[in-house]
Structure formats: structure tokens, C-alpha cells
Length: 77
Image 1 (tube, rainbow, N blue to C red):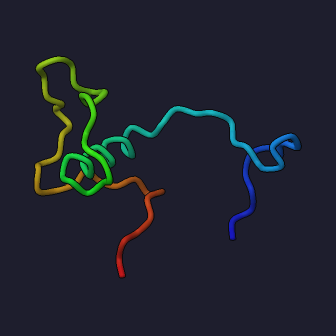
Image 2 (cartoon, helix red, strand yellow):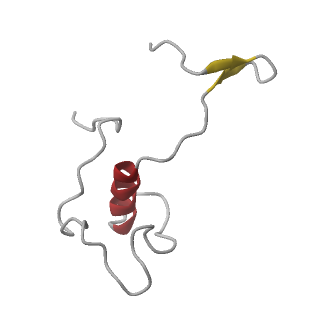
């Protein structure tokens, strides 16, 4: 088990991490999963990197997911 990170909040009786910006690679991977029906819900809205009517240049081919972030759990089994 990993040691707790962040500071201990006695009011919540738990460790709390400071807010931080989300990882764009992780968001891109989650978006790919959602677009291919591999999440629990449908895609809602445009990608944060796509403007109205324009596609992202960094998009991976449909048959291949973007590189999963290293913090994502492995599904090998």
C-alpha cells in the first residue's frame, strides 16, 4: 500500500491533495474510450482541443487508442 499523500485534514478525517490541472494525455485517453463505447456513458460535448468545426491534429486513428498515461491501471491479465 502506498503511503498517503497531501495533508491530513482533521475536519474530514482524511488526507486531501491540493487541486491541480488535469493531465491532457489522460483526458485524451478517456475521450477515446468514450468515443468507442468503452465507458459507461456517451460522449458529451466537443473535445477541449477542438474548436467549432475543426478536428484535433493530435487525434489517434480510430482503431488505435492514444497512448494511455502511465498512471492508468494495466488491463493485462
